[in-house]
Every structure is written in C-alpha cells, then in structure tokens.
Image (tube, rainbow, N blue to C red; front, side, top):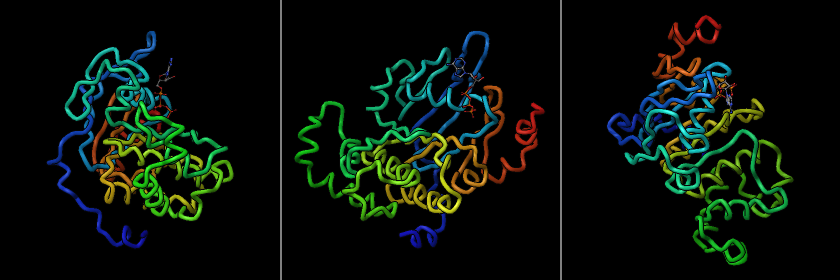
Length: 264
Ligand SMILES: Nc1ncnc2c1ncn2[C@@H]1O[C@H](COP(=O)(O)OP(=O)(O)OP(=O)(O)O)[C@@H](O)[C@H]1O
C-alpha cells in the first residue's frame, strides 16, 4: 500500500479548476478588544490538502472553530459547498459534511477499535444499540478497508485503550473517514507522534486524499511535516492572513519568516 503511494507522483489533479469545498469571506472573530481572526479569506478546493500555519496565538484554532460552528463569527461569511453556513449550529455543520480531528484523541477506550469505527459512521438519528449489535456488512467492510489503509489490520477487535498513542491517532483519523466527510479538519495531526511514524502519517494522509478523495485542511506546527504533506499553505499572524502559497513559496516568503521571528 505505502509503495503505491510513494510511487504515485503527487497528482496536480487540476485542483485549481475544482470547486471550493470551503470558502471564508472576510471572517472575523473578536474576543473583547482582541481581534483573534481579522477578515480572513481562505478557499479549500475539492481534492486539496491545505495547511494552516502561524505562530502561537495567530488565530488558527479560532478560525477552525468558526468554520465548524463551535464559535460564531462576528463578521464575514463561511460557505460550505457554496452554501452559506455562517450562522448554522455546530451539529448542523457537522452533518453537512465537515469532520474534525482534534489534538487529543476522543476514542472510547473500553470499546474495540471496530466498535469505535462503527460508532463514528453513525448518522445523527441512528439507533446506536442496533448499530453495534448488528452492524451492516458494508460498514464492517469499510472499517476493514480503512484499518488496512493505516496498517492496523490485525487490531479490529483490540480494546482501543490498549493501543499506543500513535495507533489511537491513526484510529481517530480513519474514524473520521468512516463518515466520508466532504472536508476533514485536522488539528495538529503530527502532535505527539514519534518521528519514525511521521513519514507513515504523511503517506496515510496522502492515501486518504488520493484514494478516498478526502479534502483536508490541517493546522500544524511541525514545519517539515506540513511542507511535505500540503499542496498549499495559508499563514496567519495576529489574526491576519499574511501569506498563501505552495510550500516552496511559503518557505521563501520574508513576511512569513519575520512573523515567526516575532518581527511582525
Ligand atoms: N475563548 C477565548 N477567549 C478569549 N481569548 C481567546 C479565546 N480563544 C482564543 N483567544 C485568543 O485569541 C488569540 C488566537 O488564539 P488561537 O488559539 O486561535 O491561536 P492559535 O493560532 O490556534 O494558537 P496556538 O498555535 O498557540 O494554538 C490568542 O491571543 C488567544 O489568547
């Protein structure tokens, strides 16, 4: 599996022509006198892997929270698949096709990996008892397929609490994919992952992107990781969008370097 990914040249996929899955139009969020997100415009197109970086306190999490409806934006608009979702509640945005993977894992330790995956696939009004007692075959097949993806094939019946932190993160990643989101937001996926596993994680994210057509928007502090995995990167500093470009462009952008050195 990983060889397939390694050998497949990163397709340019004509993403420039694809539809925006997510678009923010001058999104602004204030906390008292502090403008945490200041008229930020971003666009994530179908099939892209987009990075969101910036120094501590730049407004990255606040922007994510506005997109998912966890916080409501004070100004500006947010569009999901061209639909204005700005004032929608969080549950409705989640149902509209946004998945979110957090830094800390949210797995049920006492349940098997498989049950965690099946639960993650549930739609809002599913009968959970029924889902776990008599899961449908296609969901089981999908959970098997995704477990193979991240090389956790043998662990379906293992109690999730027995997995290592890295394995739990991978489980959480495929839990999100079970629900087939139009857009997956990932909050520091590389955080806490040991260095030897980082290359694998990059391959898994790319595999999901290429084979599952998952569109991914991720916050990341690990520069090597984000430069390798992302097609394009947005940079925030003090709530403002200060740059957008390919990893090469961002690495050579003086304004970005200054922001990280505290010169902004
Ligand atoms: N609920 C809140 N109430 C008040 N201020 C907040 C709140 N949430 C965030 N802030 C402030 O807004 C600014 C942006 O914070 P945010 O967490 O979005 O930044 P970040 O880029 O995600 O930072 P980090 O990389 O450190 O996680 C910071 O100054 C932070 O202190």
